Image 1 (cartoon, helix red, strand yellow):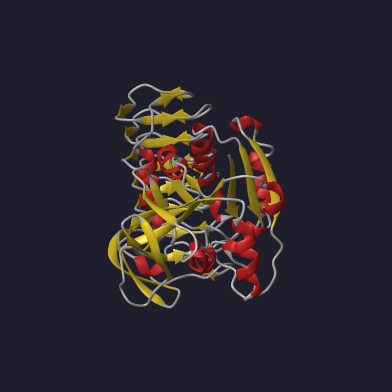
Image 2: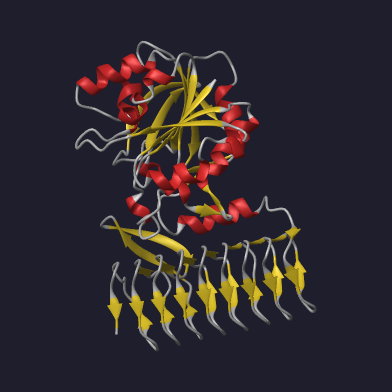
Length: 399
């Protein structure tokens, strides 16, 4: 069986963290989301993988190459943008010439495990769809069932119909490409429309997966998904750990990393390669730190995602925050955490316990405080002694 992974989208709702990175390459516990999907496929002995790429395709292609390092065989299809024809069905249609038998389709931006895939591919049914319960079904394709047979799929309904949603993971026969072609001729390019068109002719079986499935829709979702992934973190210590360092729970430390004397780390925590964690630094659970990160003395980090090449000054306090690649933070920085509403897509989203969300390559001066739930864009310059209480767009200066 072959797999088709749809990974061409921009992930606009995740900006600023997808400004120069496709959504599938966002680091979760220091590994791209796509890597979890590929590993889960390999564990089910699905090794022929087609990835449909588009937005910043070179990031995906240079990381995974031909898949040899991941024990799979990867080929790529480049989805060229066509106004009005961007949708999951259109993206899948591009793989038609590479598929000769039943296959599995997966979105390239969901965190899944091997059990999820196993639940979908098992059995002789030709058409299967993985479904889960959701607290926000209006953001997805809502599924109505008769037993385990799909009777209706409604894309992002305005009214509450059901809390069962499509994960976008399908087992399909090769004949689906004929169905896609017919639906696209009518001007629809999404898989929901394709499946809806065949419901009366073909039986689509819904599978309530027992495995892991987690979507990342908004920047604050990165924290929850990262915490989930860290629960499977195994302790592994490389690099150099000085005297009087305390490690508790599951703590993973990469090669070339130095943990200075007096550091106190409580897992689950994952620290990448080539990092320097300064003296008396405290790192609390559900934190991942990427590669080549410097954390200054006496700083505290809790329940946060620190991406790669970040420099954090002395005596900083970072909680419930996501810090993008290449960010520089001066001494005495503080990100407060709060629960409240964050505006995104002209909607207010209630978010529990959220700190700062800082885009890549932003430079922050000394003694800066960022209120909880504030998004700072990429390539910004924040002067010292500022209190940031409103959203800062990309490429902005706060003087």
